[in-house]
Length: 108
Image (cartoon, rainbow, N blue to C red; front, side, top):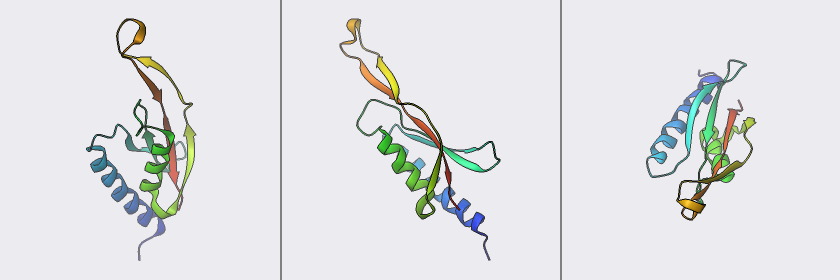
């Protein structure tokens, strides 16, 4: 019989694989597995950018996809900061890039 932890780990691995494939479609978000200070595994989600697909909503959507029906807890979340980058003199062609990232832990 599989333990609950093994089921969560399997679901998380499948979710991460699907997210990686989804990321190949041009989405600027990234999701990577990481270890939390407690020794548990978590996921670092980065959805920074300037286009409509890179928002906090995208971060929360990815968190839901990674953890599935188990749900998740937000361990840490960066502030929504950023400014104009790129472009030319006066920033005429610049983009308003926002830095958004969070770390989550799937519930068991």
